[in-house]
Amino acid sequence: PTTAGTGSEVSPIAVIYNEELRLKTNIINPFINADVAVLDPDLTVGLPPKVTAFTGMDALTHAIEALASPMATAMTDACALQAIRLIRDYLPIAVRDGGNIRARLEMLQASLLGITAFSFALNAIPVHNFAHAYGAMFRIPHGLANAVFLPVVMEAIPELYLPKAKLLAQALGIHDHGQGDDVLLAKSIERIRQLRDDIGLPRDFADYPITAEQFAATIPAVASDPAAVSFPMPPELIQAIGERVVKLTVEKGQGK
Image 1: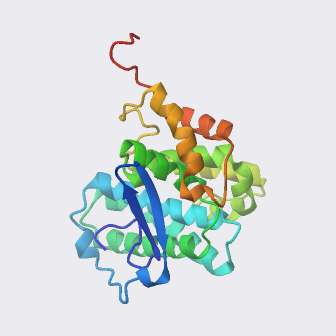
Image 2: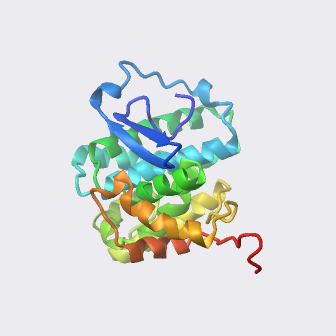
């Protein structure tokens, strides 16, 4: 691999983009996997800071969605939690100092661990659901879409993340102090936002012009994305989450 995010070197999942339909879909098959994967950090040293940040947040999203999955096991939890710890510690370093071999190696391992957990626990992935749909429609880089949606989706669907709130908080370096799961989840979401700020990524899609008509089309797009099969969301929730990250652009000729 030349990036540390998708973990495609060990993933049984391939994402296919249909340019005509502006739709992303998946092929899932164990024979997609490579026979041998070599994690060589030297191959990622030249990765630009922004792409390092994008791909790192993709790996973090894999790990968190695996941790929250109804299909999670002790093995997937172990991989997911270690991936979160490594990303917490080494993603800011890799973004800030791309030549840091230790950080690059640890991020490669975090990427591999994250996709391993994600693939084996694959079920409810609402963050990827949004990222796929918006990425296909507006060509938003996948890692950036995940970075923007991750904390918003976690706040909007807390019931999915609360059962593992304590484990997630610990992995993010948050001390428990006997606090309730709801408090720990809120602190974890804030820590994710802080990490995103630290690596220079935006909190919304203000850089992507999206009209009201296009935004309306995102609701059926998210609902019909293949990732929605295991965890369908009502249109009202899809709209509410989208409204938090989209800055609508007025089309020319329509005034302010």
